[in-house]
Structures are given as structure tokens and as C-alpha cells.
Image 1 (cartoon, helix red, strand yellow):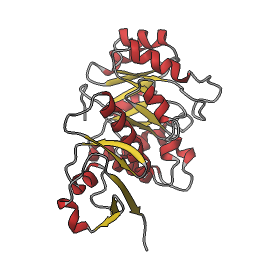
Image 2 (tube, rainbow, N blue to C red):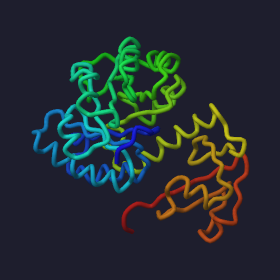
Image 3 (cartoon, rainbow, N blue to C red):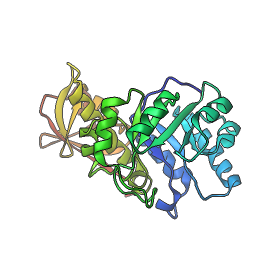
Length: 285
């Protein structure tokens, strides 16, 4: 899968230390099922042969979901597995050299920690930049948080896609979106979650809600789902369930205090201000 034309809202990075006892493939497939738009393989301390094996597995997995795969640092591994691109830090191979090696069709992302680095990466031809760490994070120990002030500055001055990253959770993501981010990246909040798919869906709901508030679709309506405000253009409950990626899940739907049978979903219209509870049953029972 190679394409420079891409857009995304939820970027997920691997972090095996956050899910001991669970396989990388299992966790990342859950993230993809939940709506991850990009997956990055980041394995700073792993032996190169192990990174290559993980990259091959993730290449097959992301190809099935038609989602770009980005490799952190290792240009040779990105080429070996035909990954969609690489992500580079400020101390890694310079952008111009990486572009000369990878060619014009691969995605190159650059980590930035201030607006000068952001504008330099943009001028140098980066396809996107990371903006962070917004909050303190275990993935960047010792790195001072840039806070939402840098997110706000990037939103005002950067014209290429940027993704806010670093310590972002469902408890603080609204502050990041209010600062102007349209794309967020999470590591521990997703791969360390007991239910990565559900966590991804929750992030996507927040992203979609803020996008709708910024540029509302005339056909969209404001609703509340599981206590959170959201926007939707779904006409009925069945369309809403499909929009949330729950069409094949074992769920109970309550609309305005009334539990709906599955057979009634397609015939039950959604009105402005509707309040829903979507209860998802996981595992056996």
C-alpha cells in the first residue's frame, strides 16, 4: 500500500511494554477494528531482526484493514516490508537524506517540539509532523511537555497535517482538540487499555464531535451517547450503530430511556437531542 494522498484523525503507535501478556498482533488488530487510521511500529530497544519480524506481521495486518504502516527510525526495514513510510526524530537521519533514499511516494513524518522545528520540517517536504509531547509521557522520559500552547501555535501556522502526541488520554483529549488539533496520537491510552477497540472508538467519537462543531454538516444532529455529546448524520439507530463500528457486536441500545429490540433499530429515527446508551457485552457469558 503506497500513497501520498492520505488523511487521518487517530494515529496509534505500538508499545509492547504497556500490554504484558498480550500479543502485539492481537492488540494492534483490536486498535484497527476500533478505527485506527495509521499504525506506527516503534520498538526502540528491540533487536533489529525482531523489529523486522514485527514489521512483516504489521504490514500484513494493516494491509488487510487498508491502513498505512509507518516504521519508526528504520528506513531499511520500511523498504524491506514495503511500509508506507517512516517517522523520524530530530536526532535521526535528516529529512532530505531520508527522502533521497525512500523516494517521493513514501510518507515521511517528523517529530517536532517547537514551532521552529515544525516550520523547518514543513519547508523541507515532510508529509506530516508530530507535535509534542503535549503532556508528560513514559514514551519520552525526560522530555519536557510542550503543553497545548504549542498545539495552538501549530494550528495557527502549520499547513501540513500535524498530529498531537504525548500523554494524550480520553480524560485530556478535549483540551488538545480545543487547542486546534484535528489529529491525535495515543500509545499507552490505547495499547495499554483492556479494550483497545473500545478506546479507539471513544477517541474517534471525540474527534468526530469536535470536527462537527468546527464545521457542522447541515444534515447532522447533536446527540448524547453514553453521557458524551456527539454529532451524527445517521437517520436511524441502525445507521448510528454502524457508524460506531458496532454492527456485529453484542450490544443493547437504550434510546431516551427505552430499550430497543434489534429488529426495531432500522425503523427508529434519531432526533436532535436524542440520548442513547450503547452497552457492549464483551467475551463469553
